[in-house]
Length: 455
Ligand code: SF4
Ligand code: SF4
Image (cartoon, rainbow, N blue to C red; front, side, top):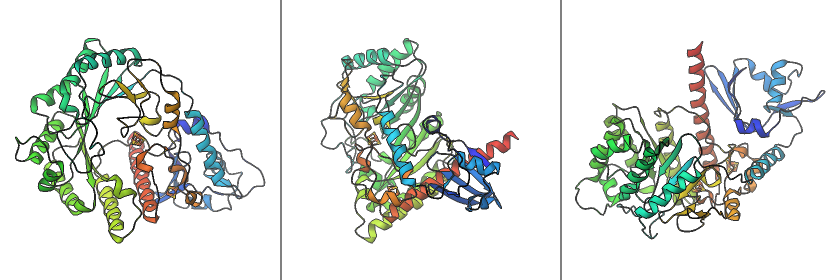
């Protein structure tokens, strides 16, 4: 047996080793993903986040007839891979959720290391699915930008901070970005930035500025189809360009060429399934000279959450998973962590060191709540603690989760619209399992390769 990746730091902090009991029959905990490969069986413990490899012939360690005086068996018990025959896993999972929720509800007023800033809620595109459609369009003024800078200087932690430019379309109010970055640089503050943008307004000079002044490391850009579908879906209001698709792709090449990573998100719905497959082939070919981008499909929120009423929706989810799996293989990023929920926090909404700053200086916690649900303002040190706690509340598991061997992987926030009305049909579960297996194997391959390189 080889340990490939240790449990998450958070798990190690909050969960004790399992004591070994004499005269007890042990069996594998059901919260395991077992993935056979050429080396044996890769086993991922969903409860702890640990990955081990059972080498060929070692499967008997999970047979129920293990010798508990054996050192490897003892280790598997201590690490919660094996539990006494009559243990109720649901109780274990409930206890873990309870601990996560209660520990996370303690607000320690830490210094902030991550600022999500909306220079504007206005946008130059009119995507039909935009959840911000109908929202008032507000630009941050330069006076507010100065106050935002003061707020950052007052609240920031020591060391490097992260700025996330979000909108609306952040480039629609680029002078705010220039100003805040320039001032941080003048003050000697270490920072780096990320952005969510449609990339239409970039140009070669701005890309250079983004690299140097904004210290932009990563941009998430949505492309919903090949030329015709993209241009129709985005429906840019500026009419000065015949082919926004080409303009955006040139900008993507410019970003990549300047060493800025690009994450291409492909929103998938019934209307563009086949086209996204074409798009991914087209982009793979066109961007073949770069290794600092990756593509991933995203199920449009409403499509993903409806009850599967017909074969169409089942087909949509299947095609979504197939494309995700296909593109995942090309992802050049180093797998550094698990995106599953035995993390200390789930997203910015329950992370105390992150805050979202709206164009008029209000403070928020969730990208889907930019008009209300504020937790405070840059003009006051007082925070709405009740609201902060509400954002951290965990959603109760579905009834069917009690029988499910994925349960510790499915911890969601009550406030998250992406999980409202969660139903989890058979196919949803299958997709979650397959996504998790892909991630586990990515970490396995990375760790196994690196340990070989070290040897
Ligand atoms: S949400 Fe679905 S996959 Fe997750 S534990 Fe519940 S039934 Fe299982
Ligand atoms: S939408 Fe969900 S995942 Fe995103 S910030 Fe809000 S709560 Fe978190």
